[in-house]
Amino acid sequence: LACSSKYVLSQMHPMWQGPLAVPGGDRQSPIDIVVRKSVFDSKLKPLVTNYDPQTCQQIWNNGYSFLVEYDDTTDKSTLKGGPLQDQFRLCQFHFHWGESNAWGSEHTVDRRLFPAELHLVHWNSDKYSLFEEAVMEDNGLAVIGIFLKVGKRHEGLQKLVDALPAIRHKDSVVEFTRFDPACLLPANTDDYWTYHGSLTTPPLTESVSWIVMKQHIEVSHDQLAVFRSLLFTSAEEDVQKSMVNNFRVQQSLCGRTVRSSFT
Ligand SMILES: Cc1ccn(O)c(=O)c1
Ligand SMILES: [Zn+2]
Image 1: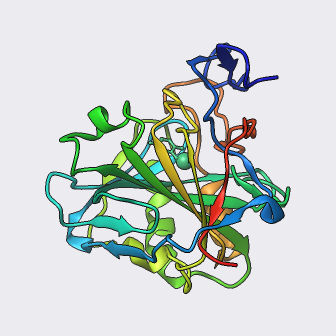
Image 2 (image 1 turned 180 degrees about the vertical axis):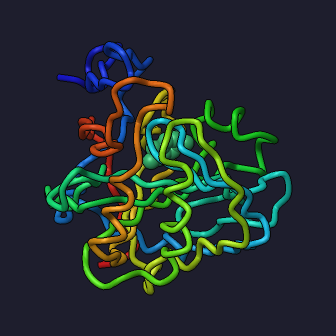
């Protein structure tokens, strides 16, 4: 069983040459959320987000996804409430998606796959002074996961979609300002599942309080197609590879409980 071994081997991924051994390995992400096994916790509070669009700085292709990065040197864009005891600062958001609309999300709900998943990444600024510090601690990060479905065009997303052709290749970056990530939240942010897990990319550290929204957001087929026009590869490489299927395989629950904020 993957949980009992001292090391778990993450999925062999072309981008991460060879298996990655992760110390411990009994709190890995992503997972399948089995709705009927989740436990309602009445102590779970509503999420409180306070995002300042002025802290938005740049958008860049890191060779695995594209990241919209925020200035996290002050407490201007924060997350608190929900399952969290402390205040967390927004540092970036990014997505995971498939080559087709049939798959692409990292988490699943009763094995249901979504075409993509948005991650809003925050770190505990009550306890740590840098993201790099927090990422190594078991209460260091809080990531909001939001499922994307293909449907009507997402007006707020279009500004981001329009910036993507400028960062087609790995390591390209452009200035990106005044983007309010609150426009990407679903109407209902009171209903979520939460569990303790890990980053889904290296260093795969088990430092994440995951908050997975029950309600998805909708984006258009064309908007998602622009995500797929990005490349994993840098401009100099001879063979260009489409940035698709940038999700990790699901990990064992290892006896963890997934709590729900709703019945
Ligand atoms: C910090 C971090 C890095 C990668 N991914 O996928 C995440 O969801 C969070
Ligand atoms: Zn992610």
